[in-house]
Image: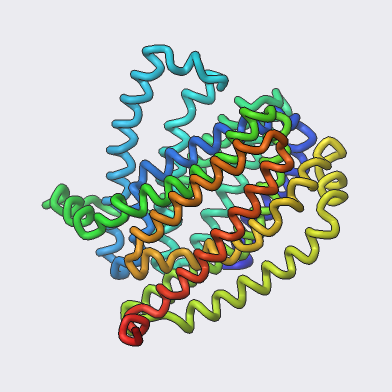
Length: 403
């Protein structure tokens, strides 16, 4: 898993070395703001049912769950398409400072991302880590190659977005061929979907709003900074977050894919998964320490050398955000304890506090450096509380019996 995720993450990182010289920070900032909205929409389309796949039994029950999840994606996307069409018809899009081509590509991009994520979650839940790695590598390669090719023709935010859309579509086709969905149930198809929805109703009720808030909170910095301080600063922030997020994609996602299967099995059999949690925590803590030790001393010259002198400011921003990403590296994989323990309502409360902190910290200061530093400090403290909360969840019924 680490090797596959490493290759998948290395591709866009190396691609950034070329993209940073093709696209100006302002264009990259506009694309990143658009992508933030698309990623949020993709979360809404799934209803977060894809996160329930690891809880399903292996084999046919999980395959039916995948079909139910994809059906949900298509239904919600259809409704969203009607809403988007009405909005465009009454002229709402003309009041948004986003190119029309990107607006038109928003829903198809979100639909492709949601479907691709469902296939990858299916592979992870089945323990098919080699196929999962191939899916991620193909997606990273397709998106990066198309963005570079489009940038050589015309280095615009629109081309970044369109290349992203077609890259994800190609990866979705590849995933479907690698893990065929099989035939649909000939009987009681609607009943199968309704049963899946009713069994996992807590996911759209609690996990969907919680994860939507989490995605919004993760993307809001770029949206707010771009709107308040300009697209160039937004582009520098986006590059810093993209680079710092690479280790999470490299090790964190790989650890999550293994942890959620092992922890879910342990919790189902013993009512707790403390040992799995502790082992995973120390792996992540060590990786976080090594990464921070390197980045704190060489961030600015690294960005200037790798991406060009005009991106040096992204290295400065990366230092401010380092505490945030260090704890996110640890907390993100362990957050799956929320789903295993069925504590989505507590996660929702935490996400609401996080959203409030993000909006306040980025809007109150009048200088972007103060805003980003305050944002990083607030996020860091909330992640510390989240790690403590998820550890208590890992104690499961054993924790309940000791109180």
